Image (cartoon, rainbow, N blue to C red; front, side, top):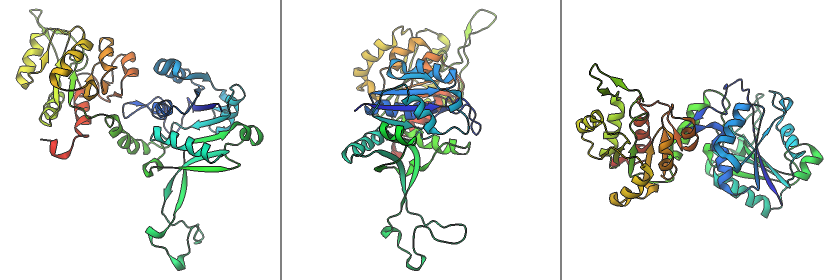
Length: 382
């Protein structure tokens, strides 16, 4: 049995322009469901199929050989084109026994959903499978007719079996069924029930903040962060170099970043400011803030992490790191939570767990501090 997954991504979206590449909770929208599929280990191959070169380029740069990126026929990427049309387009060129259609508009899909759904598909010998969420709601037609219960014998909620609402997160379809019928569901069909929060789909602008609020806790969910490493130039500052009349270098800092670091430290998370430069201005700023964990002149930040993690009694998985340039990459790749400002270099934006909405020297560090603090127990807020 060869299992293949397909993530179709249209370049044109009228309700939310450019939504597939738009950042939500620190990652492009499409990355959430794609990474869950990759990490699930359920598929022999995963294809990203798009009619837009910018989407294809981003997927290639971000995931490399882990996925296959292919063109999508523009005729199958219109507002009226069916999902089956793109499934059939891929199936005509790719060998598979089961094809999984993944929809980027359901970014709340988890690794466990793919694994549990595949186990059900195999154990029950299904021909197709859909995802949904359980609803215990009473539904009516517009003409006043009850659809799913008898009003004369209204059940208590705890006694009501409810119904399953299809949420479109992903579908499994046997290749044989797709070839014979041209549709994704048929034959012996099963349902994988997802968590109730997965009822939300990202179709309209109003859905964006709701789903982003549900995604943000997942960014730091994997690890308990006990130490934050903060880069300076291009992260804590705006990367600009300012000189006075005597040729002295000046730097611009954001008071919100400072407040964020102090609140995080007071909440019990160690804050270390680590920079390759040796600057009297930065030293003065750290002295004023009372941040004693200041490490200037660090050329190899990856080596610094290995040296100081045991000294501070934390693992790399318990560290967060915010940086902006390629010299930060070796360190960003090994910590539990990696972050960067919105205007970090592209290679860094592709590599980190979380891309800030704020830019360098303009609240990015505060954003990361707030993100970490939101995961702490209420009594650790200080």
